[in-house]
Image 1 (cartoon, rainbow, N blue to C red):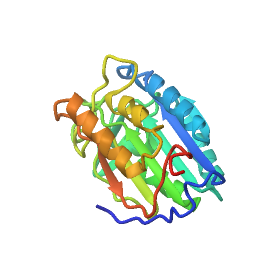
Image 2 (cartoon, rainbow, N blue to C red; image 1 turned 90 degrees about the horizontal axis):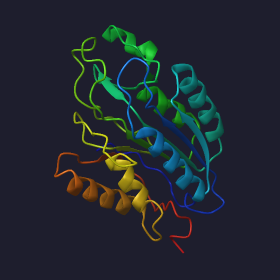
Image 3 (cartoon, rainbow, N blue to C red; image 1 turned 90 degrees about the vertical axis):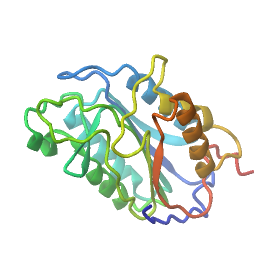
Image 4 (cartoon, rainbow, N blue to C red; image 1 turned 30 degrees about the vertical axis):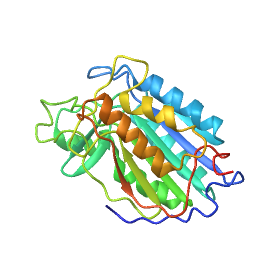
Length: 243
């Protein structure tokens, strides 16, 4: 596991500025639509606002919209205490790199992905420029490859990533595995994340372990959420949790 240490001595204080970018992509124009992301994003955004995050919400975002939103997010992170990025939608790995797919993505060749999708590595670099106390990245994007005929060498799900210093990466399932949408309002991972994120007294490490246990139980072990990174101190989404 990558060692990225964040100083959280003040990160859970009420005065700490919290900034979040929430993106959902479900209404894809050139591949099958995903039913859960729109609900996932709206519910996550509402929950984060209740926990004093300033939220930028983008739904069914094109490549241009995602690029602009990430730039705006990076600028707002400067001088903040906590940065959080949440994404629900299609994501793929190509040659060891993870990419998030805008709704207007149409891949006819594998080498097009660099200019038609968002690099997760570039996203992390942009967040790191803000020098926040802590960056949290939630990727509920480990679904089946939506363009199998034009990207034959793409592996299942997303690949593992090293977390930059001060960053915690959270994936809805293990590397090289896939997470399916469910028949309810939310995807399996986000449904359980929403259940625990507001609980008083629940530190983020414990929260993620409880979410992982519930997702694993619900899917019969087929989906096991995964995290990478290291943080120091304590962080609570609910600002009253540590009191």
